[in-house]
Length: 331
Image 1 (cartoon, rainbow, N blue to C red):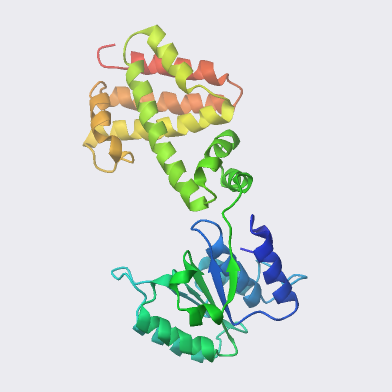
Image 2 (cartoon, rainbow, N blue to C red):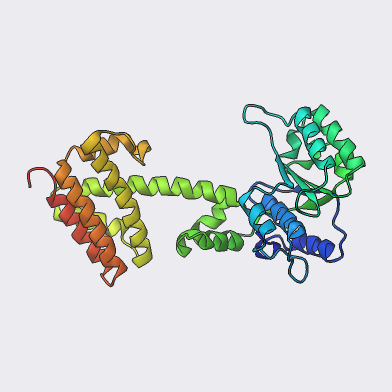
């Protein structure tokens, strides 16, 4: 991750790039802002720029050297990530002391050692005071970045010894662009972005919730397709029809549901992907023989391939649902 690809935090990035270019990077930073606004990504990009063996003009990371690759994969020996232990609420003084020991050593590969503390406000009083000693007398080769959503919960003495950079919520356009880069349908991304409140973390949660709702809707469509009523089947197809890319996405979800239906008919509920729809899937699976369910899955794959070619998405969906209806028991 390089600084140049981070979106929506131009003021922060400009400050960091100027510091790198002038070789005046602070020994400690406090990145404050809401979850999902890019604080952690920016911190790691800064560390990658400082660790890079072949930096670009302006000091950004090349992304290709061994140091960049190790940091990107999370296994660089000079990078230390500090968070509360899984069964603990706070960052303990023992963790801070271990960090101090690590920072006192010379770097293994890079010119510096770096530490990311997240969330910084989860240090208790003892661990915060211990870190303060390191900030007051920092090792010359170390850089510490604190990530916080509420910097006012930190000791004022800690805040005063860090360069404080404030991250703002992301603009809706930035959120939409990032979602599209991650593969989301553009129309869906633009619809979801305003609901994310400037947070990619919230956008991901909303996407998961939206995906779950979509799966439930599609299972309802399959149930309607088993109604033996052609008009109902066409109405069901109309309710989920869309453009080519949207319909392909629909068929990917249908394949997931059909695999679960086949599993339930063949060997019970072990290993199903849509466990939250367990009861509804069981009812739908009971309408098919295992052989009928297998053929329905094959028809779904064939239809998806046809749409990837030049088939009309809506007509292909209607034909699939009609075939699905015919494959029920007793037909």
